[in-house]
Image 1 (cartoon, rainbow, N blue to C red):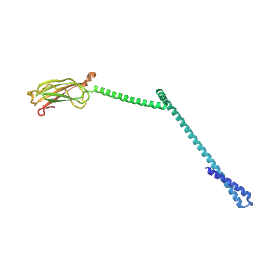
Image 2: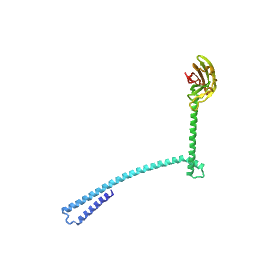
Image 3: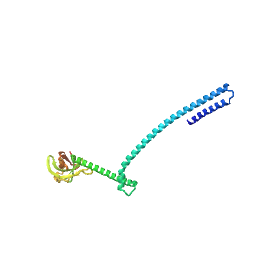
Image 4: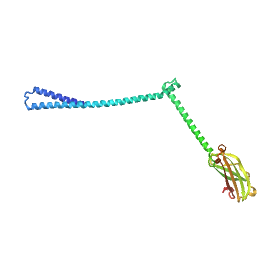
Length: 274
């Protein structure tokens, strides 16, 4: 833009200078060549002047637009700076309690060192809080599980086996509810009761860690020499049980009884559930 303005002004000046010179030096001003040349120089000067004026107007308009844009950018930058300053003040206000605490806790240290040491202490405190929170959640979970266990009816199964002249009665836990249990045993040969035994007392039994039966102490010997013939011999076992939490809840669902009939297998020498 500047080069065009200089060129247009040079054209106006040169054309005007040449017009003056030829008007002064030309002797015969009646010739057509003189008239045409002077007319051309005048038109050239007018065109150059018009072009220069146009460039000046355009340049002024562009500068006005640029100034307006710069003012807008300056206003935006000012607003951003004000926002940053306000945010900085808010951050400083939020940090001030920590600065005061760091200065109080570590008065012999500079600000940065005191803040670092305070940060370490706060991190340790946060870790301790997380640990206590997890411990409390775990305790609460155990308490919930315990409350659930206290209100859960026992679920049991029963097995029996022969060892020598003794019948061993065992309990299989299907859930984790501990119980008080005892059993009664009737030994039949055909339809005749040969012996009746009540065993186990009121034994407190807890579920084992592994899914294996828990046996009562063995009953009295029920097989006599005259009863070695095992054919048609049966053992009827009745198991009575209640949850150890029954006295707390008095929930009738926490008590139960189950009976099973076992046949003595002559070949295998063992009890088989019927």
